[in-house]
Image (cartoon, rainbow, N blue to C red; front, side, top):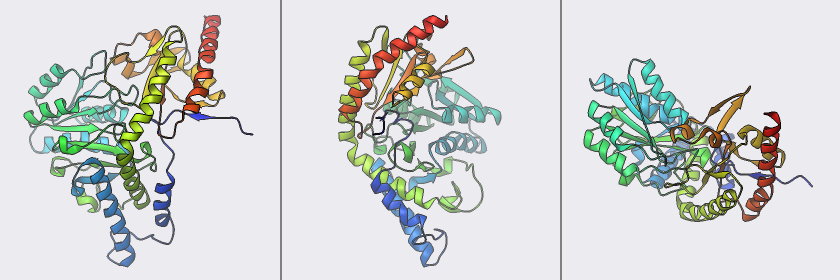
Length: 389
């Protein structure tokens, strides 16, 4: 019998659902191989499939299908939102400046720094100890003039939920584009873009049991974005290139299922997460990052003082448990997560922090298996660290 394994790294990626795989299969064979830009029968049938997927994605987030632009994933969609908005603003004589939070995904932070490399400016907005955006800093940035404000709806490391309604309202009042990176929000908490009129929004297929390499940017006013890819006229020229039909079809099915199942998924994962955190707090010198604040139900970032995150990961992996680190250590130099650093997490806690992320497929037996091993592994890693000092 194979050793048991438990996967608690669902914020990194999720397995493709059977329904998604079955929907994609015809577009990976000679059954439906046409180019969706071709005018003949083979092309038209494939074009119909991509448009059906566009409608599915639109319905799932409360958007108009005309506003759904397929990309090669969340990173590309984020870059198109941030860099595309900055370049379009510059071309129109507006501000060549973007504002993003200090706890964004590297896709957003990297895009903001790319704007700087192009001669623009990136404003990094601070957050408080609970991970909430500093609205006074946002107001100050908006007063200077900003092309786009980009904020992660749900943080990928801590699960912190931003007050996107308040942020969107401020941006709208200032005439500034607002971009919500909903990669970790969609399917986990309610996402309805009808409550955020005009907002840009990113989703990614592989976070919701769809295929890797497929995502979408919702862009209600594509004229306010400059394309980053140039060539054909597909998708109105905003994101040209022959469409990844299997990936788009998979995203459409995955999005439809994720939206329909979101309430049940949230109830299930929150029950598991809460039970997990009760057990973690019982381990001496351990806790949740951040200890307070509004968080999505599927992510738990926990820290163990005096333990090294990479060592914890290794021992958990050997025990058949998959999760991810909240810090990275190499050759004796510790660099804590930029997210935990922005929250002001003490270094002793931050360097021993891990992210556990749950899914509707996670069971109570899975949780019990992890909790039976975790205290012993933490104690072992701490004792080894003491010996090495």
